[in-house]
Image (tube, rainbow, N blue to C red; front, side):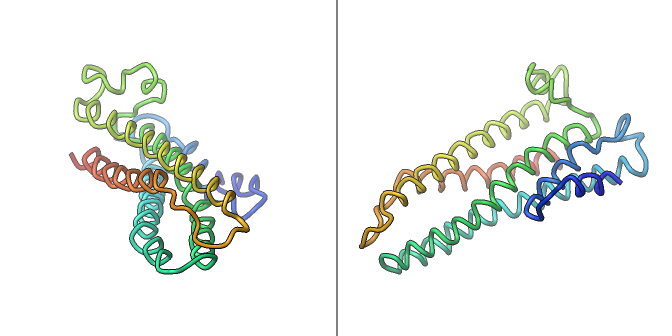
Length: 207
């Protein structure tokens, strides 16, 4: 029923990932997960599944771009290189940032739906990082994960902004476009942070 309401409020098919993210965020069971039955358990599992799926899309896309797309594009010259990089980057940019939004929503949902729920207010008042308030393991690793997420998003924003600016400056000119070295370094660092975030996520779940 909730999914139907969200989909009815979605006017375009391209907004479907955001609708799924919103559904997983707002669908919270009553009470503790340990005593929840039926819908509560299902929504937690669905939320985690969506979170893992979006992480796979984001990290997989970053690795594919850096390991395959860019090296292949660099073997081409001039306009052909620009078309490859711009075309694929434009497509992945929409998918990538949509997955980031859903990851943030489902990440918050995971905190609410876990065995020992953590409220978003606890993230802001520091209780989520206090071993006296939450599990000591969570208090330690959750902070690192959130820090890496913020850094990763900032680096990718820098990469996209500088890459778009360089592309606009070279538009209509002949020859190879100038190499956005700073943006490439930022993207490489963001990819490494994304892999580190995956590791920390596994530690948070499996210990």
